[in-house]
Image (cartoon, rainbow, N blue to C red; front, side, top):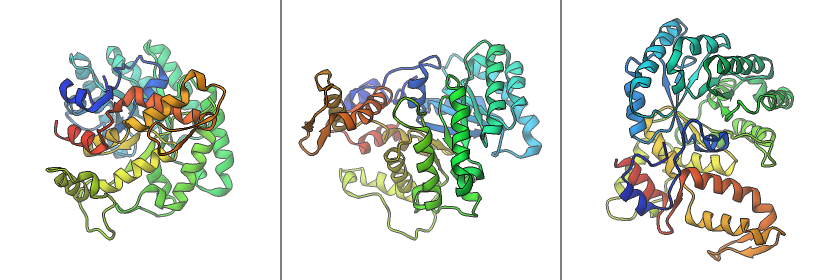
Length: 387
């Protein structure tokens, strides 16, 4: 699979200075963590789940979570598990390569049970999403993943979800983060990425952001995100990929604030309609939140609607300017440090302070590609939406 692999090679060639690389479920964890992109969640109760997975793969989705937790009722869990077993068998019988598929479970005991029941089709499973992850719950979850991995004969990844009140409450946050850090570091080879449960954070205070607001406008949530990145996503080799929070909206509602999407990038003929459509579907707020995610050290995003996938991927592509800066900073002859004017002559590139940014940018360039100099996110968005 590859990002933007669903668009024609001719169109792709016109968009990219460096095209996204192909990868598989067996690619290095560093590549897979960066490549998750828009991870689309789907309830495991859907009767045509295998067909849904194939349809979303054709639309550019490269990672999905099939949910047995909050998206379904307690009474539906047993039936949803049975449905998953059937649907995985259908996916396994298909010649089409599926996206990276993860199952979001409720309890550690489900992990080995599901792997056993999946049988041969476990080869289509990338791993498990572990909800309400804490130090006390986490070890049991991660031990269960390791045991299931040995039983199933293939590597299975874990993606813990950080969403419990002890992370939100100021008096318990430091110890909660320290405990999570101890747990995930003890199982580093299993943990692919950490996910943020911002909806649960808001729930602890009876809050819900509107489509006019990003997660970063809710200060109590923004503070938690900053602290999670501070402790768990450092660029010194100890950090993990942390993915962006879910965007809850996908239908038009009455707006209180002006649209956040500037008109100027959409002035070309026929593209202004795209801007209008994005605003009508509350996606202008999503675009702003994606930009803020990256500015705050997050990569990828939890998504609950297919309409959110292309915007996430379009804004994940590395611009030609970013790529040029990263290349200059990482040139071997720059190893001793120093400062230089960028090739675009609009900023300072300081080798030592900007090196970690450049390395992360080159990894993103590998999996999402580098846009041509004249190509902007509107071009990438348009190409992805018109398939």
